[in-house]
Length: 218
Image (cartoon, rainbow, N blue to C red; front, top):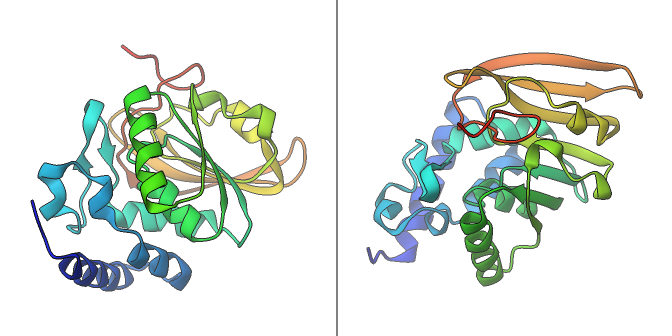
């Protein structure tokens, strides 16, 4: 599909206005969403739907999250300029791009090689800075820990202890936790080595987190 780039920019502005009406208040997050071209991160046959506020299918049976979900999680993550962030589940690369535009130092891990390689090419073309890894995201990246923030873009049956242990003291983890069919968005704030607070928010639905500390691939 060939579309004038101005059309997509206009659609991004409309999307941002709708996210604001739905309750997203962090203007930094909204500005990042306005800057990142979501149409680049969806398959060619989905580009005309890039700015509908819905999740869309991508390759390998995965999906690109609904823009509202991306904004919600990013707002909850509460990043700052230079924030060291671990993302579990690179997927389409869209969430990672938003974090990069926000000025975060992003480390993102993906288990599916096809998606990992595709995002590397997209980021090179868009000059997006992020460190991309291929592997089991449920175990995090202990060799690069600790992180200021960790965001998990797939559904976990429980909060992986490996991820909590990779948070800095004062750090925050945002993760959807629940069954394969429905999850509660969960915020974990680490106060000390063994003390942390768990805050449960709203219901969402994500693809499962596959891995040693997630769901089995069955």
